[in-house]
Image (cartoon, rainbow, N blue to C red; front, side, top):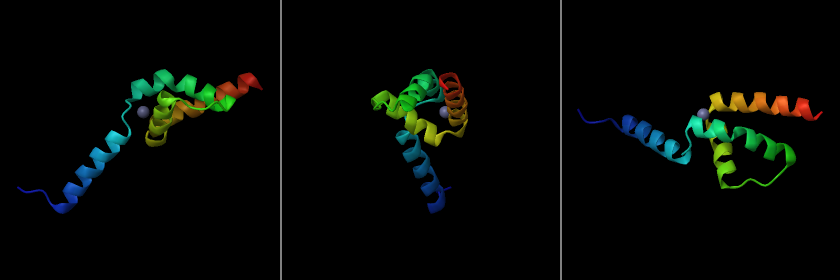
Length: 78
Ligand SMILES: [Zn+2]
């Protein structure tokens, strides 16, 4: 059965999105603490931190972890 145009579009979107977000959740969570500190200090982001940032934008699950961590860090520094 040939794919419909809509199915092809859906597949293409999946492929494009997954290559734009090359990082897995595991790789993101390993670096998320470093990313949160860099953000808090207003440090410029290196390549691996930019990958974390991209992943957080695309992954609500990791973004929740990040928000919780950020709140904890702000609490500690206050
Ligand atoms: Zn994730």
